[in-house]
Length: 235
Length: 138
Picture 1 (cartoon, rainbow over the protein chains, first blue to last red):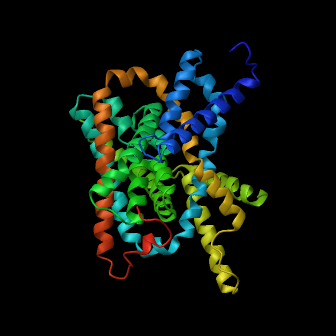
Picture 2: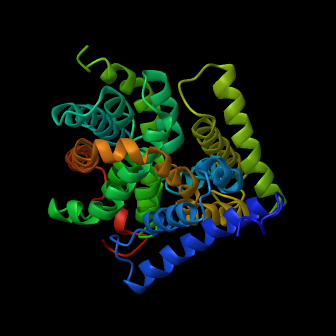
């Protein structure tokens, strides 16, 4: 297959594989009636990973094509301003609960991420890459580099954490009796950033707005808090 | 649509320039998101002052944003596939990694929800059903 791929076609090939894998994930989830267990992002990552392994393609070659999709994360993060504005009235009414809840969630995510890795004998590098994982992927990578973690690991943890929140979130929130879409969206965005937010957004517009706000504010708060939390690691 | 695309890319660029020029501990897109929200908020205020129709977001921008946000999951795949480079570390330290990912994410989700709910309940002015107005119940 690699012989057929001229340098001009290879990026297009990996773009198509990525979008196709995502489509397969979406179709599987639809088949299972929207079950959060069949997360399309997770399915796609496994599929693309398998294709790369089978075709002996290095990740860097893959990313040369896939970066065009990765690039869209920037403008899409900016686009989160729109659900935010559509729900300005809801948000304005509860600014103080929103701020306090995100600070609490961000603090718990950082401290427990670092602490659990330490308790179970993980390395300092893994712990410091775990601490910023609740922030949205690009922010988690930036914080990780700053505090001595590994950016790629933080990206992976942020995405896997997002998948955990998307998969377990709805039932966990049901367990404690959350029926308010504002609470649902805010918790999803704080603990699971973009992926959990995408899941919440597919359920309800108000949840999307609160998730968007949580992603933005948690990015800000994590950037300030996580470097302090990192100092907790015993020297 | 060309206007909407220019607005989104323009604010992404603006956010990046502001974040690096002011040495903000934030990434450009997040700064861009708050800047765009502020700009749309000001626009809405001016429209109201001039007695024009109350549209919070221009229609084309709304459609473009909804389309992109609907595909947000797709955009995490390229970075997520990076997991194949880190398989060694993941295999070696799978137990702390799995426990921390599941434990810390669940704890953070629950604490955020509990704090938010407790504080919302103490707001007598807020309508408890406000959030279910525009959609299906959970």
